[in-house]
Image (tube, rainbow, N blue to C red; front, side, top):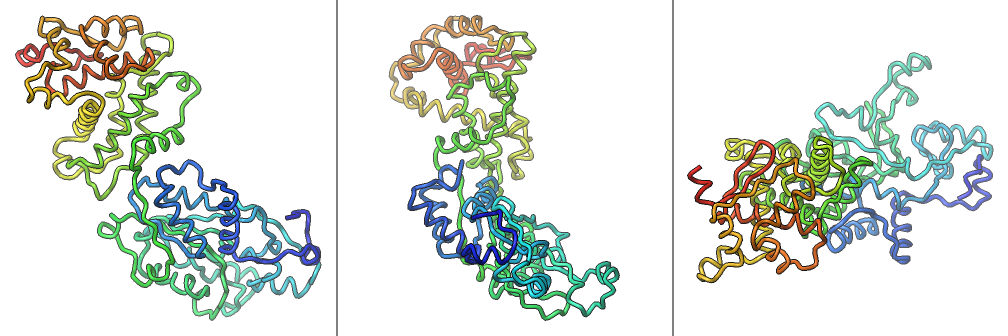
Length: 483
């Protein structure tokens, strides 16, 4: 559209046709689908579930409710819907309700057009500015959302309270021709939810007894967490009935999708970006979130946000960086021992049940890391428990025998990369085991995998592990039990 047009007359001559916001969304989505253009960026794992539901809702011109646990990209999808709006739309200059010059709805715009006709000035709004958002909190009022009488305006303009010009419009009327998002809808008081009925169904508003019928043009998107239905509030049934589409979101169904989400959201410093993070450590981070969602110590109804893995990733890189700085070593790669430094990133991201509170947040976080290592070890290697039941010669026997021969291995944080490598290579059978099951690992990845095997064997009670002040030590299981 030619944004150099500045008057209503020129806009008419250009052939501009007014469309509702839902028609814009629908038309631009159809074009994007035909051109096979991706609209929603960095939304992973929803291609076959959530996104088709969202596309059907937009094509149906429905208002939308995203229902799902924390950290499932509900608000992110709502914000990205602006990409489906027309790039620019004209509005009557200074109009309080972003009036379309061809279909004005406010008294201000109607009077201005009546006075100036084709000379009515117009402005242009970019699609990125056509998004409004409100978090439902206990202090939200009808005046905030819908509007109220403004006594200061009445006094300044010397108008009586019966004059419609004294109305101060709330967020929703001022978001006319916008995408308007209300986050955590169940937290909105029931009387405020009732105030939305007519807006959703008929498009009219009522303010302090004024009999106003304004055909608002708003695309409503609501978000809600199922936990809120019992803990803090609920969505009143008539309001749910007026929302065209309720779309259920979910956590990633594969670790690969989880990795994509995490990698797209992490923020690293310039120095941290040069640190190598082996793939095995990325997988462990994602597995921690999976274990948390399945843990009996974590409140499943609260969910475990993707923000856990994002924070854990950033914290892990910082742990490696701190190790390099403290030991005055050049930046290289993160080690598995760095994973145990991410407890603060886990503690605040999980809601614990009573039993979890009794254990303590730090202990629960450590348990989640241990379970992740045990589970991944079974997936990547032979399950030690099954080998022992078959009385077969274990793949791990050479490693176990090395520690049984009164050998021990201390992996201190201050070890240089060469010392770290030599220490791991000193354990008989360790390097050979990793090469057998994972023959194509890069050099640094192989070293981290070797350390992973030691931690995993300790978790499966095949060797002993003790925490040191500045690292971790491995030795024979029996010796570790007797001191």
